[in-house]
Image 1 (cartoon, one colour):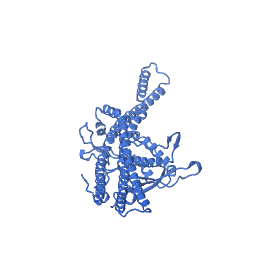
Image 2 (spheres, rainbow, N blue to C red; image 1 turned 90 degrees about the vertical axis):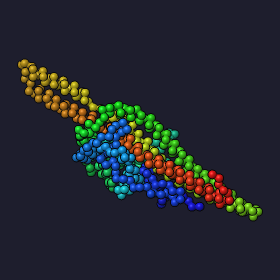
Image 3 (spheres, rainbow, N blue to C red; image 1 turned 180 degrees about the vertical axis):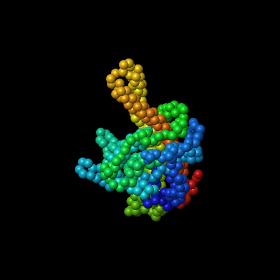
Length: 460
């Protein structure tokens, strides 16, 4: 009986996006339709469930290189295309000298035919830089540098490294999918610069100025903000932590189910070995010729057990590589949203009220000086100083108001982008259901074929 479901060339299918169906007869079938053109260009968003779709003019690209303004799209275009495939692999053993050894990760972007080597510290630098540039955008969190187990820190354990590898893949995939951040020059350099990133940083003048300093909202963009924006954001903020907890439970359960099937495959492999060992052991003893029929049946069952083991293990690995990873990506949408609300609190403040009080005080002093009789000898100098301070404060007030408006705009766009990003899970779950149905049919076919070969007629 032919084996089934082996990944091509030993390489598991890429995670996150829509995967090919799991064929019950000829293994993995990657016959899914090609994804449409990038629907995130221009940061296109559909309206949320509580709003009426309105057209929004697209703003031109800013000189700073920040992305274009959002644009509403039809409901039919709500579902996003699969995420870009990014592959992260551990490159050999640890590198470096003595106590400063480190792991090196090879990042491959198949669609753009790029391959670069990066250290974990390079990922940290990238995320720190992007957070300074885009504090009010939806940014992924990196997997931890190390974890503590029973008082010991793990940074080289194989399981820990594999989890880090997958976490780095998910983080890069999220960055490359974001309609604003994916155009960032630092991210592009991180993905394409073949030099050591430390050398690159020494030769480049890198600005970490906040996005709000170079991006000016258009009147149409400002008008697009709903009048009840604060209440909408508050409602999401109140639910985001419970959502993280709920999707963590979903992810953990799916992971356990996949590993349970993987372990079941190993048990079937053990059953095969036990059956064959028992028959081999009996070969050295006298036994009636009639025993041969039973031995043939036992070997048939052993062969089938091996095929069922392969079916279970292949199914489990595929689920881990696709469904479980996609569920983790989905969960991290809400983790990233939670972190975004946290940055809004910690980084969204300003000294607007203080500036206004000082401006009012200086304005009052100016009036007093001008009304004074006789005027003091330093009148001209005092007036010039107060007017300069007032002009400075007025510009600072305008900048603070502009930044407040920009933060509101970003929060609104990012919350909607987060919800739209959840659309990718629909395809994954469709494929999951199809894969499970194909898995069930394959198991049924295997056991039915064996029952028929042994002379039994399976009853349904």
